[in-house]
Amino acid sequence: MKSGSYMEYGGQYLPEILLPEIQRVAKAYKQYKDDPEFLNEFHTLLRDYANRPSLLYYAKNMTEDLGGAKIYLKREDLNHTGAHKINNVIGQALIAKRMGKTRLIAETGAGQHGVATATIAALFGMKCEIFMGKMDTDRQRLNVFRMELLGAKVHPVTSGTAVLKDAINAALQDYAAHSEDTFYVIGSAVGPHPYPAMVHDFQSVISKESKEQIKKVEGRLPDYVVACVGGGSNAIGSFAEYIENPEVNLIGAEAAGHGVNTPDTAATMQRGTTGIFHGMKSRFLQNDDGQINPVYSISAGLDYPGVGPEHVALMDSGRAQYVAITDDEAVNAFEYIAKEEGIVAAIESCHAVAEVMKLAPTLSKDKIIICTLSGRGDKDVASIAKYRGIELNED
Image (cartoon, rainbow, N blue to C red; front, side, top):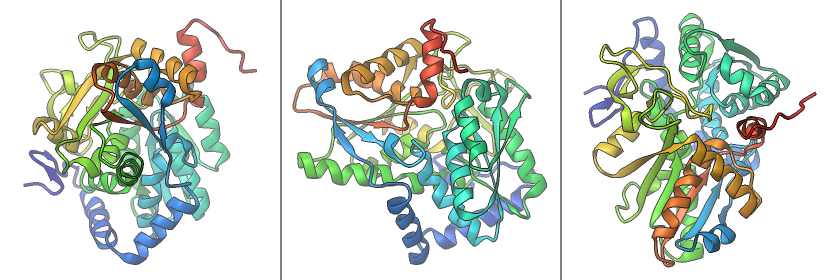
């Protein structure tokens, strides 16, 4: 069995040049993850810097309009930097400091993980370089500027299809060349062990909080927890504390793009097969020869051709269900939650909102849904306007 296994998935599948450094990261993570001093610093920063706990908000208007289950929104969009990404970045950066690293690198899709990494690098006085697919730098120019404002150097990656998977490839190449002083902060629940475990643990604060919050206001656990899934960081954080509560249904909403049965999709759970990529055994969109397929989603944060190994294990075991949401459905949800609740949510999150819009009316009024809003949607306004045929003047 490989280190960090989830059923048959996970492990460490790496070139020889990277394996010793990843093993050092795993050793440091094991050393510090239960260390009282480390945990105190982590939770203090979550509270005083990241603005936790995030709110669990009763979406009264959506609940009444949809006419079914009660809907609560876990407001990760209210965190410092505007997304859930800050939770995990704080944890990994604290490990990097304890390992004596002076430089942080990261991959990013929609830019929120890059912004969070640049933010913590500035706070800790560390150098920072971010790898981002050229296509994503074009559609997320606001976040590129934010990263640069925070002192990070952003590398537009032009290889491959110039999206998230290519940014990860470039980051891994940099890491192999500079591991002596560098820590690679992976933002999603993917990659070689210990990264999926680290992301699970550092993001589990989402479900630890929501579990306490819902019991306080409703006196019981929810019937459903819904979150969007690309690589799966916010979803694993949203699910973590409920996995051992089988009465709570876990639903991940992935990006179908133009449709599950079209070439323009990122619906890994629906269309993918088992393979090895980016240092892990998991599920990927790939051809018969094991070559990774191009993927597409309106969401820069969800157009990844794989998914974290723990999610595949949750699906295979029947513990979680995964559904595919099209661009049209996500954009409709983006507009719907803005009009109903006055919340401009990230287009990634709106894949989960779209599933809630389908699910809630089918349930009785005594049922409860928690939907995680993984981030805010300021970054997506221009691309959604363009999707609707409206060109915004950014000059």
